[in-house]
Image 1: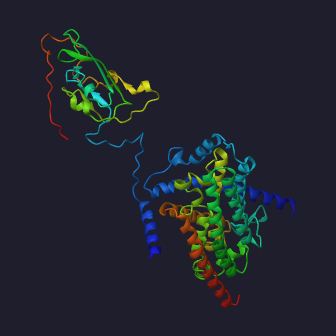
Image 2 (image 1 turned 135 degrees about the horizontal axis):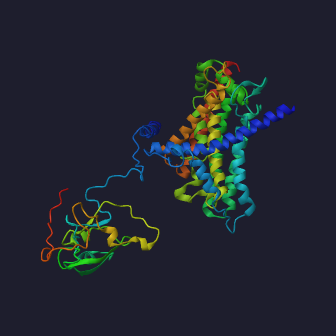
Image 3 (image 1 turned 90 degrees about the vertical axis):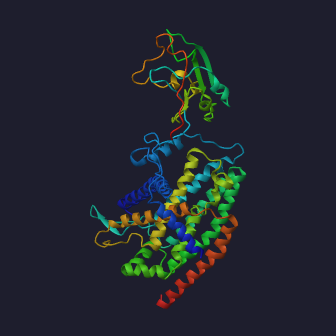
Length: 168
Length: 340
């Protein structure tokens, strides 16, 4: 009987009125992201404050949408940014081009670039969409020193990253 | 007619207009909140406490929108159509009583604007005028979608007005009067039991009125004239700003009006417990019943998808109309058997 079916439909709607709303009150309450969520990129540092990025441009090469621009410069022991010979003097990601595929993260030999959980990427003009190194780099960890650091010679002449399998 | 009476009528008319327009604003809020809860959302809650200022924000937005008139539109009719739609919606509730008599400043005030002895005729006459506004809006826009919407609304009105009229006929038969005051009092003549008998004597009347009323107000599942998926926005496709707001207003005021009429005709109107001792409870009872009716409108909108156009016609002519005649027959037989 179709009258019964109509009644059942009405009942389903009425019942759903007393369920808990699924809405997140967005700017105040943020929905937690998944552990491997691919959001805005972060450039990581070592515990002593040196940058992991060695300016190799492998991320820029891997990027399918050509969103990353890297320019590298030489490190010295007087002014050391990262272990090894070179560091990224310019590191820019155009967030309008980025498709958040994570290939840059896969390509990175030192695990410097990691996609984080920030998804609030909105801008008023195109220039703001270009995220510079200052915006992407993580803050100096406690106990570390900001870059450039003056280090003892011969200690940081190679970048030897500790690569671990993901734990989540 | 004394000066005091004129002032009384002016105040009552102003009160109806204010209540209907303010009611329109908050029915939109009510609908958005209730629909949101039915879809397990929260609904508007940003403008003011619990989003209560949302209708105000919407109104301000619509006032500041550009008033756009299409180049090839019939300018005069284009301007006139929203007015023709909204005025009948505003004046239709003039005959609906909100209570009995209250004493104020040593002066007996009847809680109705007009106790017309042909109130039922007035209702059906005024209710059909607003369709002219919709058809003219569709036609004067010079837009094919608007035209389709207008034509659909005419066809729908003609089909459903008949069933609406038939359910009104059975009410008139049972009450023996066309005055809404008499109809309400006839429901309350034998207490709560009498009211149940009232609805048993016309078993399909309420349902028929509800379905036809939904079609009359162009509400889902009968929102053919403004079927978004097929006709962009139907008859008000070309309207913007306050002219659009007036169509919106008439739709919601018609919902209030149909809900008030339905509660008056079938739910006992202003009657309720202790109405004889405290006559000012009348408007409160009517308000509560109207709110319940509006809730049913929203509930049905949230549940059912739109009818297909030919099914809509088939349903109106082949199902509702015979049921309306059957209902009228039952009411008539009962009236004759009672010796009325």
